[in-house]
Image (cartoon, rainbow, N blue to C red; front, side):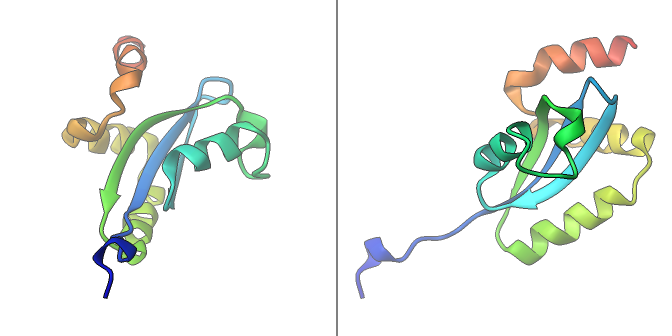
Amino acid sequence: MNVAAFQIMSFYTYILYSSKLKRFYKGSCAHVLQRLERHNSGGENATAAGRPWRLIWFTEKETRSDAVKLELKLKNLSATRLIQFMEKYHEQINPNEKDFWDAFNKE
């Protein structure tokens, strides 16, 4: 068996934020940056109205099942509880969005 041909696939659970709608969107996928591009290109009906979306939090999971389970848990949280969750697991906050957190926490 060729070890190079065997690749471990990762899955992600992510949280986007739309400043336009002042709303969070939670999802899961295998390729988080490609998924963000689809959300921001209008390729997803559920998020087209909120463009541009910002990837503010994400975490890697070993299986698609684990990523979807976390996504469903996050979708059941209120916005306040979701923010508390992200603050608790702050190491998964997108480092490119630190300015968002600084501004968001001042509101």
